[in-house]
Image 1 (cartoon, helix red, strand yellow):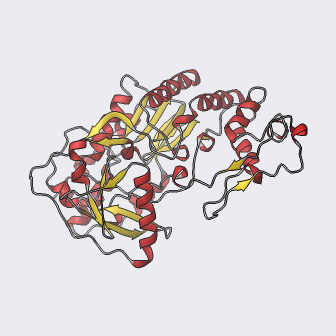
Image 2 (image 1 turned 180 degrees about the vertical axis):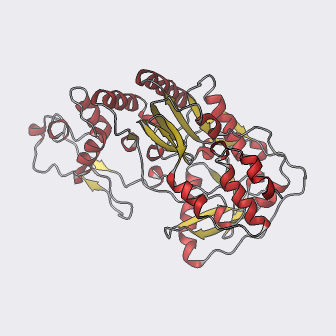
Image 3 (image 1 turned 90 degrees about the vertical axis):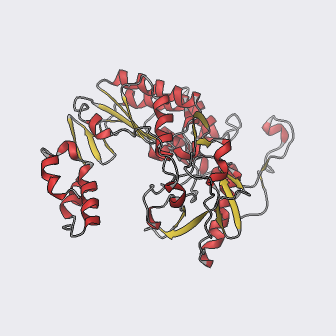
Amino acid sequence: MSSAHDTTAGGHLGIKKTREKIMSDFYWPGIYKDVARYCRSYDICQKTLRNETSSRVLDVSSQTRDDLNVPSCVAVVEDYDYEADNGQDNLAGDEQGSEDLPEIGTWGQKEDAADVKFGEALTYDQNRELQMLVQRFSEIFSDRPGDTNLAEHRIDLTSDVPVRQTPYAVPFALKSSLKKELQQMEDLGIIRKSDSPYASPVVVVKKKDGSNRICIDFRRLNKITVTDPQPVPSPAESFLGMSEDKYFSKLGLTKGYHQIRVRPSDVHMTAFVTMGQHYEFLRMPFGMVNSGMTMTRAVRRLLEGMDNVVDYIDDLLVHTKTWEEHLQVLEELFKRLKATNLVARPTKCELGATQVDFLGHRLGRGTVGLQDCNVEKVKDAPRPTTKKEIRSFLGLVGYYQPFIPNFAAIAAPCQI
């Protein structure tokens, strides 16, 4: 790594070019992270931190032009571009209640292909083949959403009367972070300033880890939205035919909803208000009643004819019996993702595993079962005493209905 990066011939290139130079002659498991870690250890190769105000100049004073054998110049590294290096945490679902409202902010550190996880049981050759495949399609792995034309989110309403609500109060301590996150989303082209007659409120709640969750409360708009008939897949049924599969790869699209555009004529309906500002979504927001259906339609078009890939909203699972077939399916999937400008989040990807946890199930090694933690949730669930608690419990166990013999008969007395 020193020869490929530090020397005059190496030229202190970036992580990707240094890695490509090394991999033209050498390979070892973990090369992606090793090269990234090595390059980042050199201070003169780094951009300035986001809270610094001045640019940093490479220190080449100890070497003359003749020593370097390059034209005389001074290399200036620009200030760190925070907006270009942001990602997001997982978002909440579409259920009611402030804890479950759809999150719109929280941008994290940059991720790339080096953060993709590989199966621990792979041989040296299998690991190398997979590394090379990921390197070929490195642009589809990022924590910044893509921009696809596979589908367009449409909002058809049963009433022409605009939904307009008064903005919810934002705690003073959260105003600064909320303002920053909204600006980042505007810079990324996810939202823009609005003068729409529609206005849904924003809710800011605390996550379990102490960080903030920024949500849009679209519940009133959802009540007058015509439901999209597109069926959402049931992966549990597909899992039952995977007991003989030996290799699995799972991918999660980077903020999948934000990779789909809102139909231009419907953009004004997505408007929301907070802290005296009025915005609207250019990309499909989380929390709308039909967002999941639109995402499903886009992914189904992406995967047309690919029988070895199971999808659920923006999560994908590749399953095959042989390694050769697995590489072929992954390559075809990567080609389609690249062609449609869809992006997968590296830290949500695990490739070439012999056992994988996916949507509450554990798959691999000749079995299809449930994750132990979810079995414990059912065992430890309190006895329901109200109609609401009964519905909640049936929803919990109903997801695992294919694994419960005579489920309908057992649950019949609980139906309300």
